[in-house]
Length: 275
Ligand code: IPD
Ligand code: CA
Image (tube, rainbow, N blue to C red):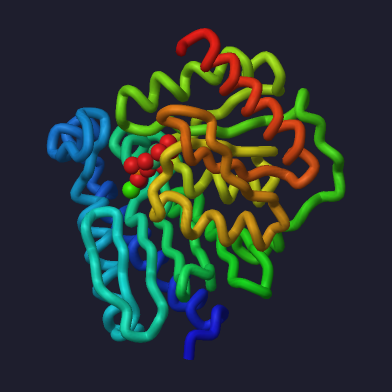
């Protein structure tokens, strides 16, 4: 049985177990600088992997293997397993690794289930705040027991709090920074929280009005997108030019047009100034 609700309850249980494990790793007050010194580098010098990432992924993969032995797995830290049931789990064992390693309170465990590319459920668990964002197709989105849905307010772009993120490759970072001079004067403010999965859930919860980022990996977005979609947010992709080809945008529905136009304007300005 691949019922979304059943998978959601498994994902929630497993995310809570992984979150407890991650909290346990920092419970002994190991200085964050030591955690950083022990961390390894991945794609670039800025892209880090800690013991927490590796151990959290192990916990998740082991538990999913016990509970759903025929399902496939795609994990950020390397877990790969082909599916025999049609269901695939997409895992970010710690989204917000840099925050975790510096003691910034924004990181989360992100787990989603998809069947042949269609989202079934997603869970994003913030263990420090004990907030569980979860959603399954057809049942809606929740933060803990609170249902997430549009609040009925018609937000204006000029008053919108917009989240974004930056990749780890320096060329993409430069491209992302080149959009900001056009965007920042047109919105209330920009937030760079450092955890894409939470950014997506924050749009669902109304803590952000919109979020955009280029170059996200499947594990950064899989679970948060289910939460945002079930909460009634709009999601689409834009090609904003070199290094920003697949820019994901998630926002309150009424911001789709004005934010889309602003991002395209920012891309055109970047193109004319930076070539
Ligand atoms: C990163 C965070 C960050 C986003 C990056 C992601 P990680 O994931 O979500 O906010 O801007 O694009 O790679 O490395 O912390 O799992
Ligand atoms: Ca991660």
